[in-house]
Image (tube, rainbow, N blue to C red; front, top):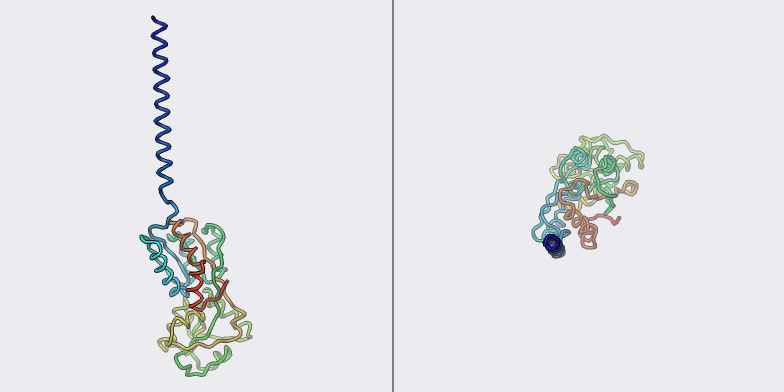
Length: 267
C-alpha cells in the first residue's frame, strides 16, 4: 500500500509538471503571435531634426510630406548655424537627426561619438552673391565686393557658409572686410532683404528661396567652395525608428526632387 501511494504521488507530480510546461509554452506562443502582429519599425511619435539654416524651406516641405505619409507622426525642426547646432548636440540637447552644411561641422558630432553610424552626404550647395532687387550697385563678380564704400555681409568663418566664402575669396586672391559677420546664412540674407547691406555671400539655394526679395549673382570661384551636406542618425535619438524613416525620405528620389527644386546639387 505504501509503495502504491508513493507511485500515485509520483504520477501526480509528473502530470502537474507537464501541465505547467504546456501552460508556459502556450503563453510563449501567444506572446510570439502578438509580436508578429505588431509593427515595431513603423514610424510613430515625434522626430526632432537639427538642420542647417539653408535647409529650412526644403526640410519643412519634406516634414509635411513625412507626416502625411505616416499619420500620427510629427516632425519638429531646429534650424540654425551648423556649428551652433553641433555644439548643442554634443552638450546633450535631445535630437534624433542632424543635417549639417559641411562635413567639418558634422565631424564635431562624430568625433564625440554622438552619431549612430556613418553620416551620408545627401546634397551639395554652392555660393552666390545676393544683392537688393535690380542689383543697384551693378555687382558682377566677387572682386566687385571689395569696392570702397560697399556694405558687404558674410557668415561668420565658423559657420559653413562663412568658411566657404573665405575659401572662395582665397581662391580669387581677394581680401574683404565685411560690415558684419552673421551666425547663419539666413541672417546674412536678411541684411540684404532689409537693405541694411549692399551684398551678401550666401548659398544659391537661399537666393532662390528669397524669390524677388533679392537678386543673385553667380561667380566662378564658387566652384572652389562647394559644400557637402551630411545627415546622420544621432546615437541618443529618442525616436530612432522614426528618425531612420525621415532620413530615408530625405535620401529617396522624392526627397531629392524637393531638394533639387530648391537649387541643391546632387551628392
